[in-house]
Image 1 (cartoon, helix red, strand yellow):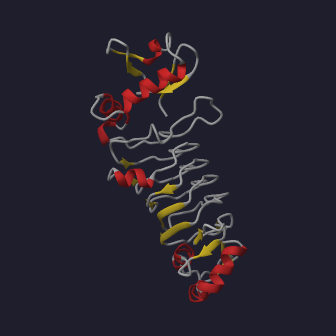
Image 2: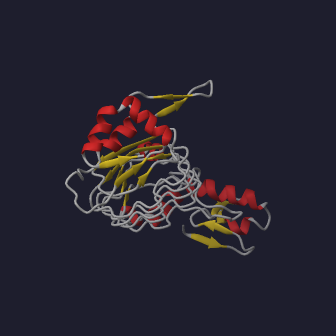
Image 3: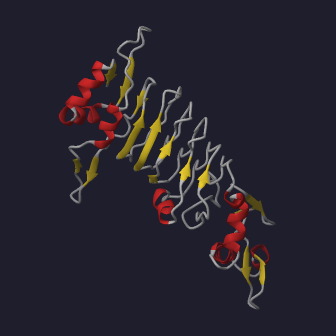
Length: 283
């Protein structure tokens, strides 16, 4: 994330530094801080800087997204882990353009943004990662709850892509046989309840064991209720590549954990048998 370090040593996201003084003149928020509390100066500068129609919204986002042509979004909306100032959050994240990414590694790493898919949908914007050859730690440890559709068809690695995040729903994720690294992709994604797989899964040891509430919905009484259609687990099984003719001696395996396996046995016996016939072990 682009930041600016000011006189007192603190850091601020660039584009959130202008405000109006008592004479209605535009000034740098840093100057206001001589007479205002730090928080007040920050808020005044932020509100002025993000407001559409005020000029500064367009100025910031046109520059930050290169008028919609930016392709390198590495670290673009990451948080500042361990910082008292923090990084990107919902109030600040208000993009003007969609994201046509060539590079998206650590794009939302540690981010305090919580709403992504819903924000982009509201603004009719897309997150396009279909050209990315790697998608490393894109959402790792972020607070994002809703992830839009991700076309990962060019990616050879989704290493730690969602690891440790608070993601609850992933609209879709397309994988292909180009994928060679899924290490800890869904590690500690304990809040994940829905992810729809597309394409072909031809890589070993994809693990969803931490996401014990896949295809479940939390009820008002505190109990979890399973959707008998099990769309997430069904899509996972249906995307498994045919390894029945493989002679390498590899044990092809997908790890779902005990709770998810119980749902598969109960509701997806046909899909489970098909996976077995294709040479897969589900555990």
